[in-house]
Image (cartoon, rainbow, N blue to C red; front, side, top):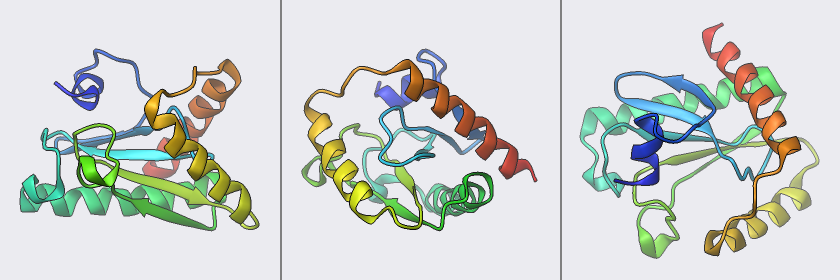
Length: 149
């Protein structure tokens, strides 16, 4: 059972912004940018090629909806849609997931630095900080609300 299977099963707390019968979306606890969301199929597969066609289409449709909600709720200008598809592509959890990473005007250097930092944390993620957790919860509520509108 992967970390994401455990999150989906409710065994580990997560800040969910969206859930349906096919997928879930929740906040990354070590965000590259404010509002960083992971979109994960409920089907437990490691790579995109293992995901069935309806699940594949729905996962991407949901990721696009999350991006739209990030723009409305947080004022992002654009998004990165990132998939590390397999261990050799630096996939840290062997369960398909799409990172939806908001980009903000003027954030080029800060975001690149955070992406490098994020990769460095794969060996041992840093401790969660209370101030970051509060911001994640606030952003989670705002994105979820934007999805309902």
